[in-house]
Amino acid sequence: MNRSENPILKLEDVWVRYGTAPVVQGVSLEIYPGETVSVVGSNGAGKSTLLKAIMGARAAYSGRIIFEGNQIQKKRTEEIVTTGIIYVPEDRRLFRPLSVEENLFLGAYALDDEERKQKNLEFVYDLFPVLHSRRFQATATMSGGEQQMVAIGRGLMSNPRLLMLDEPSLGLAPMLVDEVLDTVRKLRERGLTILLVEQNVREALEISDRGYILQTGRIAKHGSAKDLLESDEIRKAFLGM
Amino acid sequence: MTVETLLAQALKALVSGLTMGMVFGLVALGLTIIFGVMDIVNFAHGEFLMIGMYCGLLTYSGLGADPLFGLPIAAVVGFALGVGCYYGLVQFLLRGPMIAQLFGTFGLMLFLRNLALLIMGADPRGVHHGALVGKSFVMGPGIVVELTKLTAGIFSLLAFAAVWWLMNRTRIGLALTATALDGQAARYMGIPTEKMNAFAWGLGGTTVAVAGALLVNFWPVDPNVGLLFTMIAFTTVALGGFGSIPGAAFAGLIVGLLINLPPIWDAISAFSQWPILTAGEMHQFKYSFVYLAFFLIMVLRPRGLFGWKY
Image 1 (cartoon, chains in turn cyan, brown):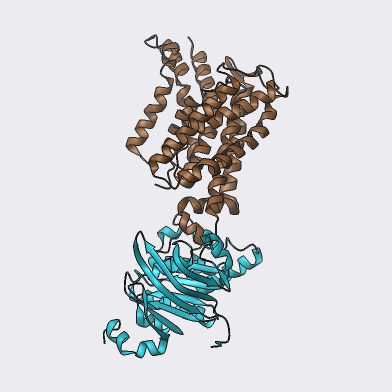
Image 2: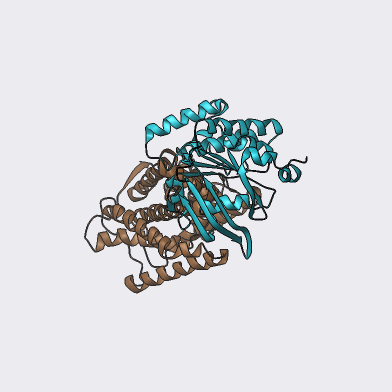
């Protein structure tokens, strides 16, 4: 990894609260271009809230969020999307009565280039062949795994500079969890910059370059994914060893 | 009374019901678009219609042009009115509780109605001359079709086709649908949902104002004319299903036909030598049929005939 580069995304002492309760308490993190970074932690640690704050869907009341050198914490969600950050939400948030292809085209809304859209569509169908055979099917009628493919595919439709995946394995059968995380691995190999939030600590760290452990809204530990997987506290707290 | 006149009466009611039904549908269309996109009920919808009617009237009486030229004027005024109301009032109401949204658009209704009263006066006014006004043609023995109503029906059908095309075949239509389904998810796609809301209000204003400009050719306008149409439009939207465009068209036709039931009833009672109720008496009840249908739908299929969101 080339650390002489500037981070693509940088969080400096970010605080977010729900009502009066602080959920994210002074988080700082950095993601460099081409990296896959995991933010792991148990349920309620503030992982999703952190991503929503980056997306402008939750207001960060203190701290700075810098994307490619520009502060974005005061921007609207749709403006942040056009700067190149794509968020794949944890509950997938598909447009359920609409078809696979309509969902995918909506994912490319921020893109003006029609040729590019077609190329991205082919790329997504290449990545998930099953979606091509179901492209006119309403997403509400699809299985959880297929819906997750649509959600990730939709996120890839606008050439994201940074892809943020929020618990992509949530609610899926173990076999599908592997499949989804395998997809993340493929995207990583293609050089995409990915911020992955997961409860499956081991699986997430295994496909990441670096990781941050979030505990009750604070970064408890961070480092290379390899070091984290080998550290005693992680093995005890999350991996049951 | 013979079978022929009975049939003629029924046919006349059918034609009149279908043409008026399309217009009722067009009146309801704007309401269903706005409700579909942001779940807000626009109580001032009838006042938008009234303003569209005055656009047609003033084109005729103020500019001295044919009332048909009022259509594009009403379309533009309606769009501006819708967008203006969104940015000036509704976007603030959306941040408040449901009750604020109800009272907010209710207040808008009172404001527009009394503004019209101040400017235009309380007297009903109609269009007396025009390319279509007063003209009719005979479709068969006893079946006279007024050209104004027929044209209004055909234009309404065209307006429906245009809106359907916009919603289903264009990028902005898909973005509107996405905003309607899940605003937050739409923002995650980079869709500016505030602008989409404003556009929905503009589109709703355009369709209802055009309906008004068509209606004024054969229906006199006064500042309170909106009340009746708001009630009919609410019923139509509920019948067709909240947020459904084909639903609004279909329910509009049902409402049009139901309102034209009395002459058929009259013909039947005369024919059967059992004149309990005449059309004159039945006319008192013609809107009751509409609300009866509304009641039945609410009991049997609460999301309406074509409901898709709920």
